[in-house]
Length: 309
Image (cartoon, rainbow, N blue to C red; front, top):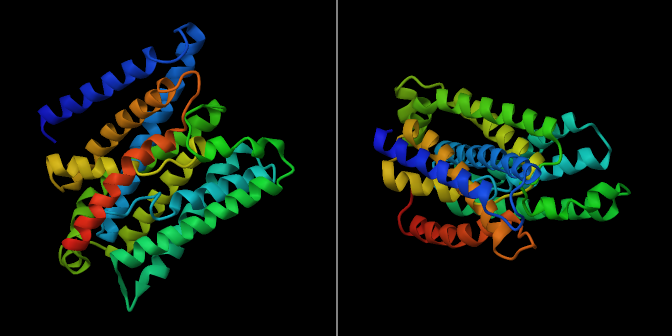
């Protein structure tokens, strides 16, 4: 990544942090400052993690439309997290359940889309939409029948929110997400090779199966951890990596860290926007990202159909 682009990203992030701290429906006070700072940290971690997960899925599936929300992975992670709440398990176990939910969902989607050993764009997207819809229905079912009053209040959370209710949980999730991003950064050379094709990667000495499995686990862990704190926020892993690639190219050694910084800044801005559009009402951040991400997804889908990856 060139110094100019890196400085621009840091400037973008700094402006986002400043905006998130000083703009809102309430006047700034020490308590409000602390609340907004927690939201900024959450937005930075969540945005970076979702973007990195998107980059990973797009690289190993060789599909620019692959993204945790589109593939249903976020919904699967949500089911895992809600099951933990449903059975009154400790908060420390919820990220684990969300991780397994995300991983199982990705396996289901991938195997449903696989026909004669190949995974087409249409099959992958259709499988993701179907599985995501099924898991969303399961989420609503669990919420509706739960005797736990706390679960009935998570409908807002399911639409995406950066409100922080548990600082230790946020700390745990931050560690998991940062570790996942670190592993992904370490494997960017292998991800570059796999993006060219599995045969090419094998010729370059990459253990394709092992790397793909590890990256699947990393992306699922990141997504599941983020869903525990923020709920389901869609399209971050689609919008930001696409924008970054259009500026700096497709080298994952640059795309991955640039996407992480840009997505963190973007999600902080989206959260600020959700708080100031209709004060004192706060719009779920998932609604903001869907308004932006939906049209981008349609444009990319049309481009993908005309020119296969």
